[in-house]
Amino acid sequence: MKTIITAVFATTTLLLGTSLATQAQDKPTLAFVVNGASDFWKAAEAGVRKAQAELPAYNLTLKYPEQAAVAIQQRLMDDLVAAGVKAIMVSAVDPKTSTEALNKLASQTTLFTTDSDAPQTNRIAYIGSSNVDAGKQAAEIAKKAMPNGGKCLGFVGLLGADNAKERIQGMKDGLSGSKIELVDVRGDDIDQTRAKANVQDALVANPNITCMVGFYSYNTPRIYEALRDAGKLGQITVVGFDDDPITLGGIKEGTIAATVVQQPYEWAYQGMKLMAAYLKGDKSGIPANKLIIVPTKIIAKGDVDAYAANLKAMATGK
Picture 1: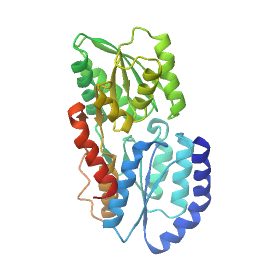
Picture 2 (picture 1 turned 90 degrees about the horizontal axis):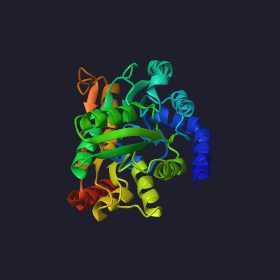
Picture 3 (picture 1 turned 90 degrees about the vertical axis):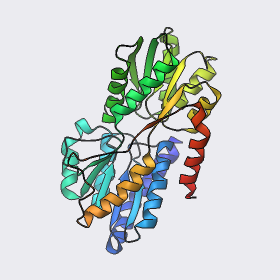
């Protein structure tokens, strides 16, 4: 799969300058740039499609970097700027080390952030979740599932990204004063093979762990698979993030306590419309604090069917 993604990306990169430059002569192009290959972003693709139907005067596109690496994501965005893209909304891989590069980008095009903010840069605004609040909701799931306390181990893609740091801190804050502790978090750089291996290693090295938390969308499915393979489903409390089908299936069967879901569909849909309005000089959608928060919510066993039906409706536009 990794090879296929790389090949597709390489082809896209070769054609990017020509195709977008051609489009730019006709219509302004707005781009949504994600932080790595993950099914999580399929909902954002649907949001972009909906916005495209309402913004016929623009070309809208969603781009995946070849790898979840700062340099590769930056190169992709540089290519977009060179091709004449008028605005970019990005989930920055590592905002803390990218301030200078993102500010350079902001001087060349209109820059918004999503999912993982870069508040120290000259971005126009952030649209996405409050990751601190999402972390606190994860703590609520853990406290309800483990009234007698326990020790949790977390798993995440990008330890340096703001969304990861804020979710982790939010969960720690939410667990404060309880008998539950988040003892450590392990990163995998959005490498799903490594993500599963991290869980497998933890089962051997940390026999006292009673809870596992998947902070990125694919982490919870990899936790589920590792526990299933080890015959330990149902023995360790699992707290999830986002709405991977494996996560929702685990919640429905009772092997995952619940999950905190975000709304990437809305980030993309609202974000594209916001960027289009901004380019036309309408800044009324930008709040004073430059933060547009799309709420997260907890999906437990009784919520799965209705939530899954809503996801399907968004994906199909029906």
